[in-house]
Amino acid sequence: MPTIPLRQIRAVIAVCEEGSFTRAAQRENATQSGISQHVAAVERALKVKLFERTAGGVTPTPAGLRYYKRCVEAVGTLEHAAEEARSLAGEVTGELRIGLMPTFTRAVLAPVLDDFVPRCPEVRLHIVEGYSALLTEMVLDDVLDFAVVPAFEGTIGLKSRLLVRDREMMISGPKAGFKALAPLRLSGCRPLKIVVPGPDNIRRRNLETYFQSHGVAIAAMLEMDAMIATLEFVARSDWVTILPSVISVNDISRGELIVNPIAEPELHAEFVVIQPRRRTLSTQARLFLKRFEQEVSHIHDVWDHTIAGKKRLKATA
Image (cartoon, rainbow, N blue to C red):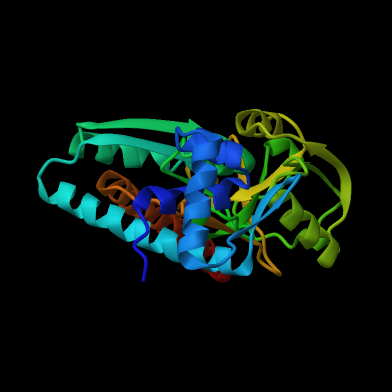
């Protein structure tokens, strides 16, 4: 069995993920001819064709895709071993680059940072707020260590795992006339004037499917990919929006925004953690994610307690 150098394996991974020898060379700080030679050397050693080369780029053959997946696993194992060795050396240090949607920065992030920053003072933390398309591209480009985005079909070069399945809530202002925390059957409401994400947003497609499947009447629809502006507009108008529970937990008792659980049927959104397939999460990334998941779980407990308490009050009224 031929021994294939790691630099050649990384070249195969880069070409498979980038779909281009040119982009693979840029990523690996190499020349295009150098990357091409590395891939050709691997194909000669294995006696199998790994890529189909066309004018539009390169795509992996079935053998190439399988080889890529095994190589990514092997490189990930090596990086994980190195990360474990570094973590045993003592203090957690280094950079941590995270991508989060506004869904999670409004209520989840601050408590996490309040705990994480004092515990890991030597970690250089950089957090980017954005929507799923941007964050996914930044993870693919290795600009971010990981990001939290809505669940999607998957992409070559990324690995993901489910972070949370969150209940959707309807958010409105006092002018809309809804009673706070009362479960709402949207099909029984008057036609809604609703603010929704743009058509490229995964949640937009899920919302439209729910509306069509369950007979929800829409009077008007406004597209807005700006979370703070959406909430400000809803608070002062009779328009509504639909957002996951994690973003609205702080609005339970403030009164500026009215929050109503969606019922009959409930509507849920799933969010995943994505990271480059070829990399393993650092110690600081794992610590951050652990605290992040704890805070999301705490928010769900708050909502469960609040909704259960509302039901008890209604039953005794």
